[in-house]
Length: 295
Image (tube, rainbow, N blue to C red; front, side, top):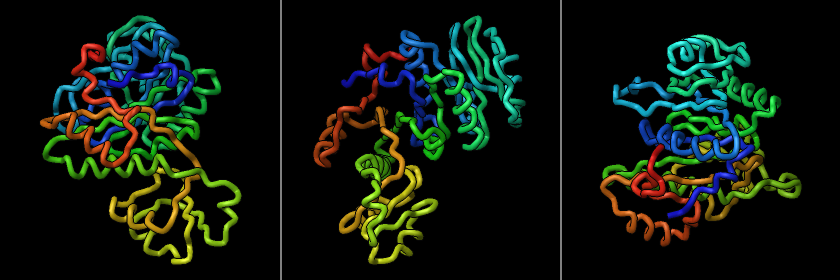
């Protein structure tokens, strides 16, 4: 069992993303919070809605966000009024959501709260820029379902990926895992690569349709970052046989949390070994261990 290096998350923007609805993002966020607080008071925010008592899609009970004295949060006015905690308003942002205006608040009395976030990546980027300008630099973002484009809202962010794998979805999820690992190895494009005659700087997303239109004489394809790559595993592996993909921006995967259902950890670890993937930042079923009991 790997241990989390909490210090590596201090003074960084960390996105907690997941492969599916109810993957366990909020549960993992609640695990992180008391450990982060040993070093600093974090800023907690989301994109969309999180921390609600019931899942608004499936109606299942959801883990709530527990905020402690000194925490900073971004949510709506209506959310702080319905919380059992007590807050001090720090800033009102010029963004209106379906549930009210977004505000920055500081916790004065601990309690539970529903987080409501910005509705667009640009709004999220603006809020993060404001927080960092105010020297609020340890930022935890409960990310949107099955989307990682929000990671690029902060050019210096990192991310944690929560992946729920069962016997039923094993094949498709291992493909996603492989794509993620491969993308982490794409090098940054330097000036030499940019100036090559067989290089192409791609504007926008790299999809299967776009890939088919890339000229055959292009050997170095440069994309903005890995969140702009939307290829299947066969498409990606096929292209990488004779070509290279470079990134303009790199977002490190700090940890991959694998939540296994009806699967043996040893079989997945053996598969990772067979693919020569580095397992140093992988946490298997962390809540099954006494050391990683959720808080």
